[in-house]
Length: 467
Image (cartoon, rainbow, N blue to C red; front, side, top):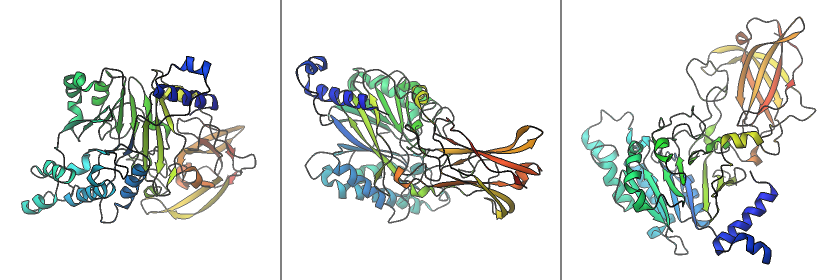
């Protein structure tokens, strides 16, 4: 997040860097220069999951957006085909060549394809018993189909780990499973590719490097194999997908010994565990349905300047921004480290007149079983200067003598946390089974809003409710 002073400063240094001027001297002689054109720009997508014919429309829309906004390449961090069928990859290639005939944009610039396979291209569910002739004609992960199809439809050699140069910047991609060979590849090719010269280079694999994006608990991370390899290269910027975590969540960019970026999904958002309207998790009985995640289809446009990299997050259903650009300075500082950003966050809060209401009725839990339920409803909290609402903590409090005693507490995601701010919902709710309240006679409910790093705003309360 930039304040006005940092924005002006960054704009000046970007102009000076591209002009080759010394910033201090230029400031003494002339007004600040306007921001220059980026040194290189590229689109970023992941988890496209093409399945049925016609569902490539969003992919085509994303390619056209990148084309019309100056991209020199497009990176896809895996899971392009949903069920590993050859025709799903062929439709991807058709979208590419329709948008970039001959690999070029209408203004003649070359646009590089920077794609990798994810696990969905290699794991062909429900087809293991099919006849070899069917598999050979239809399935990527049969014999050498994945390599032969790649070379035929994308018109380039297939390499388990590839390296490409785009306008003087190195891009490296590791197809699914090959991240385990990354350290060897980097050590053998670092000098040839200029990876130790301090200039940023870009890497993509499908799973998140362990203990980077979202932290150590991130679903489906690689166990740290790429992290250990990239720790040796502070100028590395890694892009990964697989988790489908929404890029409205600022934990999708991480700075440590290198930089790691989560790429969201162009098909659907994974709405996290441990929330009553989030994904299923073993041992947690939930009352609410999962959020309609298919409404969130995300990507980003990355622009590299002499002194910084900007990440413009975009939603492709509504065609709108998903928030302020992430800005990564190239001066060795780490303003995007989790600790640094968390320390500056201000939690959302409710309006002074916000009220919590409670009702009881028979309903069905997520499993479809009839359940005696209590619904707690409240207006949406207002965003702060730094943060939108990510989720809410709702606690049932029983009154014992002179103490409010918590008997149950749950979290619920904001229904719009993964959408553009213009689509922010004006209300929220959560459902408790009466059985979760442990037999108490009466309760009141406390509701607190949270931003993505976990900072909690002030609570508001319902009236006492007789169970």
